Length: 518
Image (cartoon, rainbow, N blue to C red):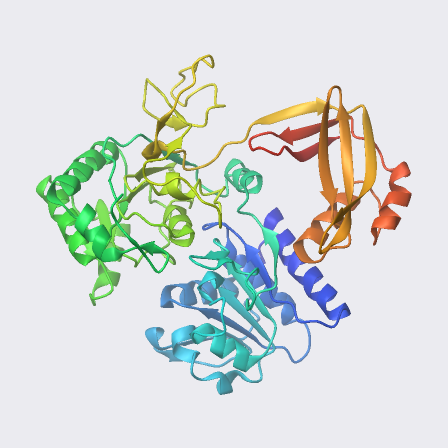
């Protein structure tokens, strides 16, 4: 059995702590675990399954929407815990087995809930596909099954419904573990679990100012008319070729099938091996295999390789499909996060300006108005090599030193694909604990750190539930303390150690304490 990574163990423990808490309160809880693409989500699912199966009379159903992910999750469980009885129920894989642990495609089982009435747990991979309202194949099937549901995703939100657990009719109740926020995401990169993403300024910037919105995203017909033009496509292809000459594999996201074919034609015209995959072709698996084998330099797709596509050597992603969907945005960029030998980074060429519209992959803003295609983002470009950086970066990869007296701005299409924090360390003189009240919410404890002329606050939600309470309990563990209520925490706070320093993230409007120096 493999040794779990630190975050895989934390996510595992967070789920069972939450379920235990729900059981004590006699309520049903359906938690969500957020792990970025390439973060080892399949092993987390395997770990949870293994733990559940330790108890008597348990059966676990794992639901996924593609045959590729069905196979990946099945293989991970079998390889990690070979003693478990694991089956596959997927028409796409020509297997219909019902075992104590069954990995199934929702398309194959969605109308057959009666076959799985004996199952006691359900796990949904890519759970952002579950409708926030009581409709759709997933919701109808899971409501008929009526068992606890654990969701896994890299993008815990839907296009029009916001976060999965915040909708009035949501199936899911809480996010109990989240690795997508900036500091944890960046730590995964620093620890070598995720590949570094980087972006360069693109000369071409696609204008979609006249394209209407339909069902929450850009109208596809309008996008095609605005973007699928010979002069735009050829310019994007020529610029992409300049960037990928020394790279191994480039994945292109296009608008529709015709757009894919036009992009392919221009690559081939320039002597670059390229092909297309889309939903209406029967031989797409063979084409994908050719790409992974190095026989193709470029693979172009539309809405096929957004999820479930696993090719660690991928080192360039070209975005030619503008979107307003945070799910599509995160999932497409996430294809480049896998690590591989001799791969130092993945280059994102954002012709579509999706990063400016929706934010860096580790700082997606949900439910807030963002700048459109004509908006501004503060970044800076290295004058030596053209790499884009957050304004706080002092040295470029090429060794160039930035002069901080000059404020640099750029077009929306040059936004940084991964947000980088502004970190400061402050000496602590005093700590104060007070009760914090908020309407329609349980009380919490406000902790104020006095650092010279500055003050920094954090809130300990000890009487909240789910992920918030788990964070509060961890805060107490760091101080070798225990408390169940605000009153207990305030009473015991006189005995808590005072940190010598605090490390503060001052990137955004409200500073956030991320580390304590004892």
